[in-house]
Length: 82
Image (tube, rainbow, N blue to C red; front, side, top):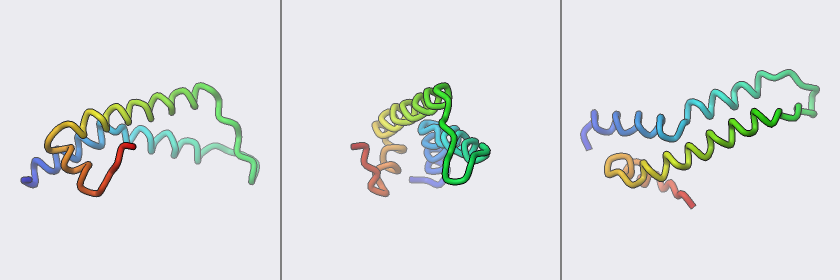
């Protein structure tokens, strides 16, 4: 696999897995103020949005794993969808 093809495939994987969106969401939770040892309950809208992100990420994984370039990268480190 050529370097440019590999880089493009990695970029597509990051977008397809919604990695940046998931990390940003989790980082936002760390910024919430809470009583030590008693994190706040997340509002349902946050939970729903995060669930949608995870489902979208899983869908992206399924789609990307069927393509030749991205599928080889995902299979390389032993990523298993099950």
